[in-house]
Length: 339
Image (cartoon, rainbow, N blue to C red; front, side, top):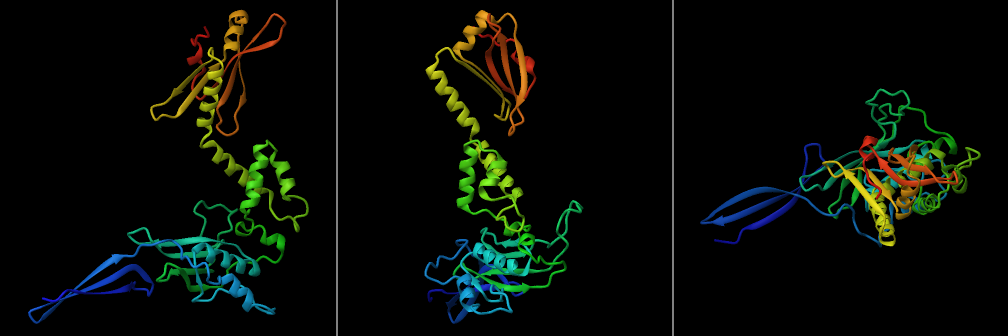
């Protein structure tokens, strides 16, 4: 009996697009007869092609479009290849800036190995609003490009639709209203993060990064800067509890008389936290005859009331007996001892 042979080929789907599978044909020759067995195996691999020495599609378009005045420089053409899906989106976004519309990711397809085999990049007006809002820009625009995978894990344009069913932007200011043309680069985002870490207001941050003044000349919209600040705040929230516990532990190491109490729910989420220092306890022993509980303050990110136990000393000055962050009833702290 001879060793079985194997033939591999890429499988195509019914609509002519790659199905994300490889067809394996095994042949076995035994006693004058040949047996064929066909099996399918899902393709897997990286999400992008690594080709550092290959000229990018943007560079090719710039070189080919030199001196061209009556046609877009970044014209999407069937067969144009890219190293990554992000590079393809940047290319299509440059084309959309020339024409006057915005772009975003559309539908995609993955095989059983979670390997993405197809990606649509569509006009921002593609699709319909599910909420029925009249403020949305979506109106079923068909303009799009479809990306498919190459054998070396790159991407290429397999379909281009250029027709739009809406008016296109004519000016710089109108183009900046599209989300894809109002992105903030990594350096500017890091600059905004440092400004916010130094407690600068959002209005001051907008002034420093140029998000204000004449609409036709500003590089960024104020709404974009506000969205970035909100995302940075959400990122800081993820580890705020760990930072708070670490800070309280450092305070407790320096002050043996300090007390910290936590209350969590069944899922381990923080419900309330109370702390008082040794100085707070000493003040409570001397001036704790009358106590007020002030919950005027409320944190912006967590919507948790911040309460202070406050008294008055013999000089009619306010003294603090402790602090608390809470999400449950206040009465659970009525019996918390300070001694």
